[in-house]
Length: 358
Image 1 (spheres, helix red, strand yellow):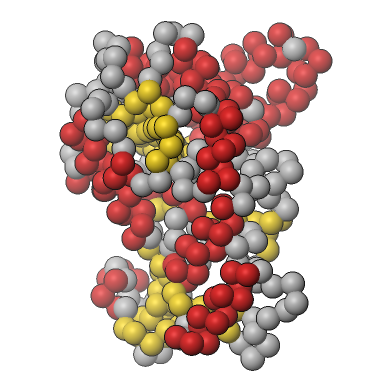
Image 2 (image 1 turned 45 degrees about the horizontal axis):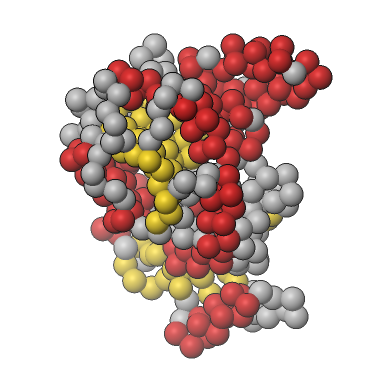
């Protein structure tokens, strides 16, 4: 290890030396646990900027979407606003401010295990109850759930094709002490879909057991309690081959195996898996559709114009933020929006006139 190696890097190196390589999924889980514990990831001064940090318009339109669901459901008085991994609480603050204009004031629950981020979140939304596990979600009313850039941070299991069959990709240490990914020894062929079994050596198939666990539990809650969920993330519509694991530090992509715990590790989200898990619970699935098209359907153009008129000195800044959220060469196409909802809840807005991609 280098003299400036993090404590996590040193712990992982000792663990690997004592017990052998660890899976990529475990490496990602431990790295992100350490990284988010610091609470410094988000915003211009952090390592990356999420849509709520780009503009208040993003959270406001989500607030309108949730309010529309509530109003068309005859305004149930026991709804819960739930956000998974709420970052600094900016999205929730914008959404809830918008919802309050329509006298919709749900009880608020954040799912967050970083104590540092919990402090920041409660500064933005003082009335939020914070829990660390989805098993603790309230069970006494409908749930309106937002998962913005949540699933991409969950660990991915990588399975790599070798001349001897498919093996789990693991993290080991090289002669110089650096971390490196390599095939493990245990056969994993049964976890690879038949369509990919004959792929050439070095092909990588990804899956996320944690995503399956979380989504299946949440879908069960929605089926029992009623409500709706929005998933906004970057990802793919159909499974394929290739590693999507990436790391970001200081707004730049870096080597994911270089400084564990010092950068944000993410992987693309399998929207088909999320949709199918919802369907297994007999929920309605809407989308996914591109974020830019969805925001336009919800009225981002009109909202941007309103903000620009109200603050003409910021008009250029507001329009640049709108472009960043909706343009295809920025966040508009890369990010997708998927909704799942109880079948007795209203068909959600923003999807009907757009052709669902799954």
